[in-house]
Amino acid sequence: MSGGHSTYTPSTGLGKWIDARLPLPRLVYDSFIAYPVPRNLNYAYTFGGILAIMLVSQILTGVVLAMHYAAATGLAFDSVEKIMRDVNSGWLLRYMHANGASMFFMAVYAHIFRGLYYGSYKAPRELLWILGVIIYLLMMATAFMGYVLPWGQMSFWGATVITGFFTAFPIIGDPIQQLLLGGFSVDNPTLNRFFSLHYLLPFMIAGVVVLHVWALHVTGQTNPTGIEVKSKTDTLPFTPYATVKDAFGMILFFILFAYFVFYMPNYLGHPDNYIPANSLKTPAHIVPEWYFLPFYAMLRAITFNIGPIDSKLGGVLVMFGSIAVLFLVPWLDTSKVRSAVYRPWYKLFFWLFVVNAIFLGWLGSRPAEGSYVHMAQFATLYYYAFFLVIMPVLGLIETPKRLPNSITEAVLAKSKNGGLMAGVTAAPETKG
Image (cartoon, rainbow, N blue to C red; front, side):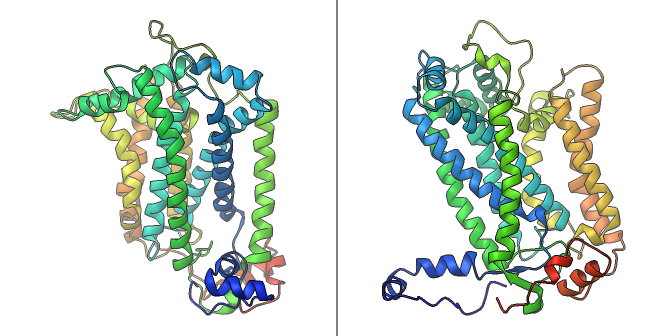
């Protein structure tokens, strides 16, 4: 899919002059206009474009907010309030940035689940998947450090708890914690470090996103059938067919985004963060933002020692391991069939995994006591079992459904059955 001669032809003398020296218009044309995409892409594939727009939004609003923010413990909380009250449209910028983080994670989780469902990590796209997981890790680090910046109660105590995780590691734990904090407790050096890194990391994310998109264009886009493109009739040009679908998906997503910004801007946050940080007053319940809650639940699920590993270290290892296992997914799935559409048992276990992830998020918001701990332990067990047991074993024993011979055959069959892709098959076939 990624090969083929460029069909871009400059139409003006200036265009020819630029193309001979810096073929940027040709790159844009080949990547976003004539680039061939499978003709059966659905709306689950629009989240990549949504994430790109959200990254730009977060960087732009973050740069402006940084112009008015004071990274000092005695000034940070008041500077955020000044942004909200005195800076022109400061309330809008702040709410867009804060809720944008939640929307960013909402889209990335949908993107990850789509990849797991349609097998987007299988060869030759292993590196594409790994780059995606790296982006996810950088997002988590950026979001955590950004949550500390308002310097409210949850910001301060969240930083205290999260950085305290590293002390669970013998020998290296304390030096790592002190390096993060800039001392022996959360204080002004911590805030300065976190502000610097929070400002820097989004640009690192943008760099890895470029590699991610590059890898995508080299290997080609996957599709709901999981079948590779076999002929030009299996594809359509990116513009207008994919761009129109992406635009519609973005409009719906940004309506949701706007609803939170204008009607319930603090719904996804914690009220304690509107109280200035106080090192002498611990909140009743210290919880991270909602997008970290599943991992927080897994951390607290380990209430027992595992041989020489105590419960604290065990919880930290389980939490970090839940992210590390994502790097191994391309090799853990042993099935030769890519898409869950043709794997009935995998489809069942996948949807159980989605429900389990949401359940872990709810458990992370509950107190770590009584039945909540036991449920978290069971949910954590299923999380790991899905990757380490179900994926490898199911790929060996499952009998998949018959695969269509081509993408076009699958589209035509769905069209005959009254599927939603009938309009797509009516589109003229191109050589793009």
